[in-house]
Length: 266
Length: 269
Image (cartoon, rainbow over the protein chains, first blue to last red):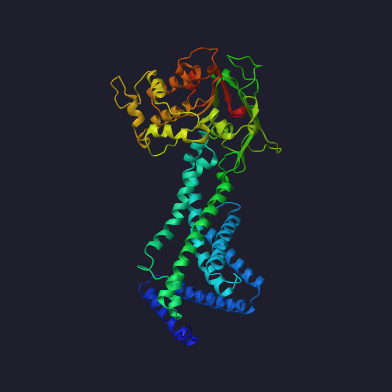
């Protein structure tokens, strides 16, 4: 498998970084004002990834269950904070709800893939767990933030409609049903769209990586197909969980809409 | 005359023309308080609505008239008062907590000044209400609504203003094309088909011209007296129907209400 694999030296990485001079040069010539951001961005990206590589090497070598699960939980926490960070409104339990949703969804699908499909023993073997979890978290995070943003936004925009239904005798679920459905559709459509053009418009990163590492394309696509199923289901589950939790946070058992729990950022 | 009718705030002994003071109110709020972003809008209000009563709710802008209606409709959480105590709402002798809210809200119906509609015909909006679980044993009755409309004085909501008036055309109009005043009438009809006991009317004719206002007033009058269903019998249960009416028009309140509850503090009057 590692027969024709080329290790990248630090020197080679530095050569690659010369490409950023193109971006910085363009920014300076065209006065885009992005030169500084490009430099910071490049350094941050390289720093973060080198650190992650270092950390994962260490966890791989340690091969200790608590450390593995600890790092996985840490990644999940960061993903849940990032998902909330992309939304424009807040309510008091939003971070907790995001965490529960992303944890529930990601661990369910990752566990299913590792122990049910790949049948790895133990299922948390880091070589498989971290790549899978990373990809699932990234996509679930997107799904959650899209669903959350849409749901919170439409609660304030369509407040009159919701309260009209409530005052005509709707339960809170009946009153919010259209908004919940709308939020879930919004969050699922990007995943669905990318599924439709997969392999035609884009060659997914994992497959590309495997091919670079010497796996035959025919083999690599099999992994990719499994992975897309796992990712799509994680994102859908996470979005559903987070919208249901947000619904429970913003309505009470007296079928009242508690919009004052929702506040705008800034 | 208006002054005589205006009771001061906190009054619990609102006289009623039709019922003795000892009869139990159909709807009452005790010790209700409300604050919005830290500002007290009203504190420790006691408001009683007797069976058959038509109560006007008045007060200057920002005195919280809509908030009081929303609270009575159970749409807002009851706030705690200045010393931390919570008020209570009673309807038909039962505390609000004992009511299932969907059930309660079809009996005590709040009608917003700017009613919302789904983007479909007026009739589809009327029908849609019956898809709610709480109304599953009822059915939409187009004939009933047309019969109600035909009792009314003017073909004001039809495009044909020649006199005849085809009300079924009104039902087929897209709700989004209704004028503000027509939408208010559609909102009334939507609620009346659910046979509420108490209406909480938030400026129900504010977007209407004189003609439409007369139309709405007659519709509500007929509902309250039972005339709408051709049962103008004062012993009938329908006479127990009551409303709380918010309006900035003192003439209208004089026409449509027996009593007045004013939210302004004493110096405001």
